[in-house]
Image 1 (tube, rainbow, N blue to C red):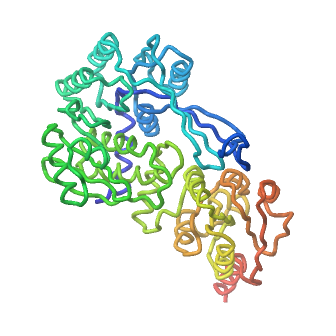
Image 2 (image 1 turned 90 degrees about the vertical axis):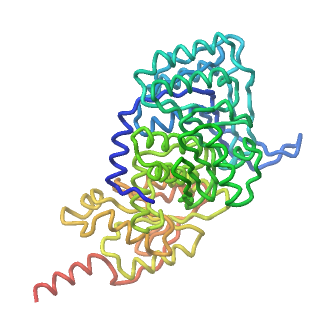
Length: 490
């Protein structure tokens, strides 16, 4: 089951026209980034030297982030505390252009905040500040009234339940009933063991452990998985049920039967937020009346991208298109955007992998290129190749170059076993890419001097190094082009 590029482009165009309401537990995700090189004398714990901090939308905000990445029109309704964290949440919503007048502050309630501390790209601790008590009847009435007033303008309602007290049983029933009466799909990312509160929803996206808890059925094989899924979908009268299964992909249940999609993730570094991506993409597919198989393909593709990133992440339209193209071409997802590759390499560093970087135009691949790349790969665990874009080459080598376009060059290079990732850059030099990717080793041919290697000072400043590899005389793209021209004139 796959979507071709034309279908995916049509989906993305449709997503930008969808009006969605997100209902659920809003949280503040705080990230503290630093480094550590010593153990505290007070206790056997690392001392983290903080470098920078940032705050993001969390909880139901993860769904908002995913929908925003696909340019949907978003409204949100929730209850937060009348405190500093609540103010920060409202400020972030306003900065991102999300309708915030549906978010009500309640005196005495604590806004949920999760603080994650990272040292050298490894999470060392998480600190939670929250209360989980149910919101008041007055707050329930506020949200119900808001949903009723908004329903006529909505295409879909996303319910994000983190069990922090906003989504009470009474409120859930009311929201689902409002959606069903108006024929607006209500899609739920559930939590807890009592799934009766989700009765009548259009779609649920639990993981395997959550299904076990909700059904009381121990899932130990495919048979027990099907039994649990069928029971849950039937009892709750769902249009569809998606059980996410981590490295095993996902299984979709509907009145027409069941099917399973294997994961498309190349590497799994962090599953945070993957469920929100599945809910968002599957839901947007359903709203556009795509077959369930197509919606599942979209959700599976997006989840495969997100779990390759560190921290709660989203997937962009361009990342979906790139991943889809790579699956179709068989290049094993080696071609990445700089942003995606940053997250992938952060995960690789957690495994103490040594990252090697080289760059070039690689217009007309020849044996000199191949031998240089093979030698570079032997210096570390991963070889990242920075590839000049077509525009960059034209500026450097003139209007007649390149002979081969950037996409074709990227796929040819990605087919080499010695190349782990290819990233295309549009600048004249790879300095910006090197700055963002933070490689351990820079490699160039021996026709360079160490001082002439772009990025040398930066890489050496954090303990990296430059390696010059023997350049194979006479093997150059220019020589090959000249030889072809000479032959054509004979």
